[in-house]
Amino acid sequence: MNRLTRVLSSVAAVALCFGAAPAAAAPPAGTVPGVATAWTSLMHGDAASTDSTGLRGPGTSGHLAASSVPGGVCAATFVGSDGFPVSLCTAYLAGDPPQVATPVVTLFDPDTARVMATLPLTKGGLLGGVYGYLDEKNRVVVADGSGSIVHVGHHRTANGWRLSVDHRVDISKQIGDDQVAGLAPDFHGRIWFATSKGVLGTVGPQGPIAATHLPRGERIGNGLTVRRDGVSVLTTHALYEMRAGDDGVPRRVWRHAYDRGPARKPGQLTWGSGTTPTYFGPNGDSWVAIVDSATVPRLYVLDSDSGDTVCSMRAFTRSPQGTENSPMAWGDSLVIPSTYGYQYPPMAVTGQSRPSTAPFTGAMTRIDVVDGRCTRVWENYRDRMATLPRLSRADGLIHGLAYGPYRPGPQQVGPVNYVGVDFGTGARVATRKVGDAPIDEPMQLTGMIGPAGVLWQGTVTRMLKIAP
Image (cartoon, rainbow, N blue to C red; front, top):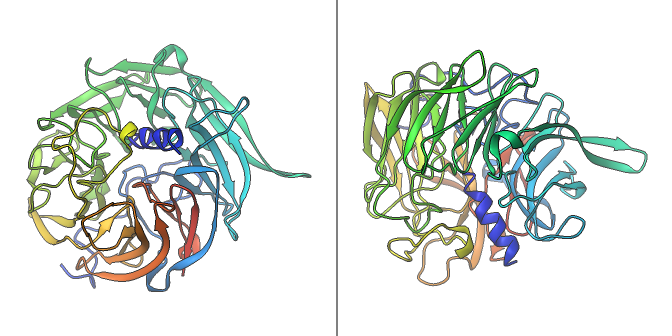
């Protein structure tokens, strides 16, 4: 994902059994200093992009507790140490003069989910605002279309809440007319950024900016994943492990080319892997995982230091399948949802898919690394996950929004359910209707589990507060 920027812009334009913890369940290695709060300050749950959390989700009593209509699609939501949810949204119409597909930072009431304040940002060719995070002052750190990284704070005033750009870093000399596709903090106080055309750079704690270029022709459409000693970057051709020197310049540690298949698949946005890399395993970040985009897609688990293959296997036993979502991780385990056949808006995708269409039947599988081998624990074809789910290590459930069972006909018509899936068995243990598509089309957006078991989840028209 910042593949979701294309989705949001187009939408605006057209209106083992669970009972014991998994093996080597080390604490996540992705909680970096300088962020507001563990597990709720980064889009993928932590810097390691495990899409997991130490907080409980809504569970079997989960229901729609509140909602609001923010006037756009909210792709990433964070919850600060002050308890306020704040989202990076794409408004249908915003700004002065008004423009479609405008990036807007949006503050929500934690009790009622109503919109408390908004701040439109400078619009670029694509919104560089899907990937961001909350810093230690609960400010949203995000790239805007002016070639800047901005820190947006929320402040209580005599007239209510107000959002403002409290700090700005100009990176326009480094990126030119390119757009930021990924943004993340590291363990040394730097901010890393990556652009669609392959510029990779850092902003140092005291302000110095350094950048380098990845090979020409390789584009970046996913987020950056961070560990203590490096950063993982996925392009349309290869996975890179990068490390910044004392001068801040990112340098390549290793490169792993992958099979991108003959063309873009239906249910993926670009011709290439759609998985943000995931660090996991011993010490929390010894391995890194991606799923390629081959005709028969494979999971690759690589050694983070060397790039050597730890293990590899078919991502799904049935063909065809594929995924545009990042693998979830817990200990030595990965959970991979399939998006094959998901109907993204036509303006969101790049190039013709092969085949041109396919049914979205859904799939999800858990694969563990056991004694150096990839081992499938379970696989189900019942859950048509329509969001990037969140795995709770506190309750052992995978939380997200899903469609009902597959039936021939329009994908985006019918009930939208909050679901909880057992991490240990793959069985559905919670189902509660929270909306109806197409009004509440979930768009494969990412939700955020916050305190008190609340799942904050954007849809094409609403912000949902799903609570126990």
